[in-house]
Length: 187
Image (cartoon, rainbow, N blue to C red; front, side, top):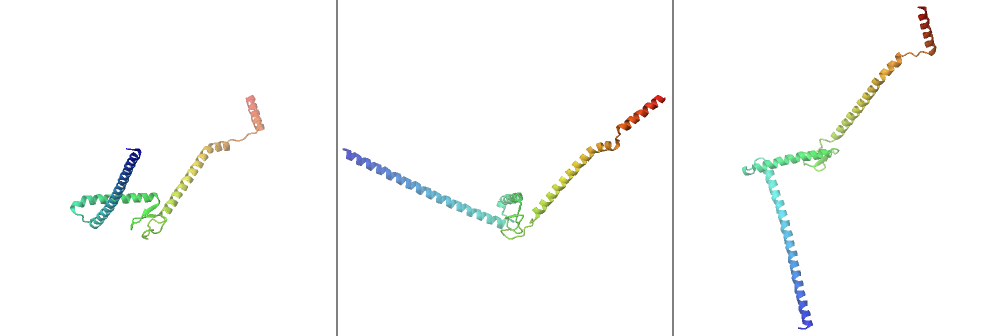
């Protein structure tokens, strides 16, 4: 076998391997595409199952079949817990939950932006904020009055002392001392 035959054989082998790699790659791509389609169909099916379950729950929640009573009770408990948590979350955002549609409604909005239901807590936050500010103001005024009362109590003995003490001039002191001496000598 000469050099050219060996080269052709090697070329054929490389070409054959390249075709095998390409075929393997195409199959892998096709497998991945089919798997994605299967996953997509499964997700759609799960969504349909959830919708069927939701509709069945809504239609039969008042009188569930015996075999579903436990599940219905668990669902009711979870729904109630979710409602409480939503209200708590809305409260942290100065909002409430619309009783008609369940949407979040800011306290500053008169009506629900989703269904138009009147917001019962409209303006409530403003009244609460004003009441809180009035309470803070009253507390500050009480603290100020207490400080002033303490100052007055501390200053009161000094004022009493100053008002009861009489200033005596040095001449009066000398005169009083002189009269005391004359009284002593007279005795």
